[in-house]
Length: 112
Image 1 (cartoon, rainbow, N blue to C red):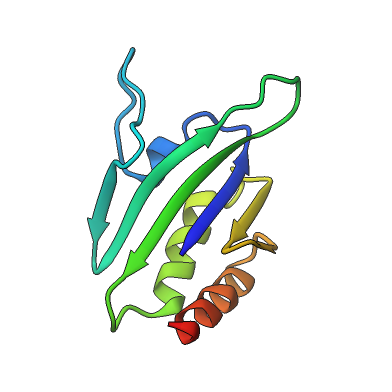
Image 2: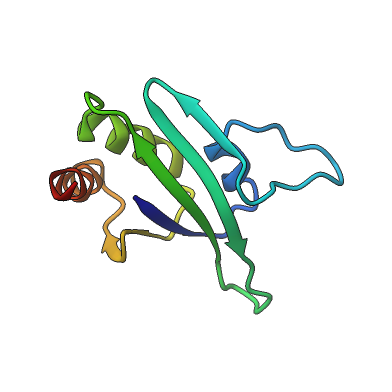
C-alpha cells in the first residue's frame, strides 16, 4: 500500500519510522521499521521550497495476513492526526479521520 502524507512538520517522517533525529543524518530511502506484523518503508520526501507549501512524505506499508485494517488505520491516524494536511492512500485522497483511513485500507486489503 502506497501512502503520501502532505505535511509542514519536518519531523513526521522520523516519527512514522520511530527514528531519532540526529544532526546531519537524514532518513534514507528504503529505511524501514517493522512491528506487530506491519512493515513501514520510507520512500522519500518531496520537499517544496515555496513558502507555505507542505512537503510530501512517501511510505510503503505492508502487513501480514491477520493484521486488521482497523489496527493499521488507527496506527496511521494516531501518527498523522494534527500533523498532516492531506493523506493519499493508493492514489485515493482520504479525509484525516480514523474511520475514513480504515475504510480505504480495508478496501485495499480486499483487493489483494
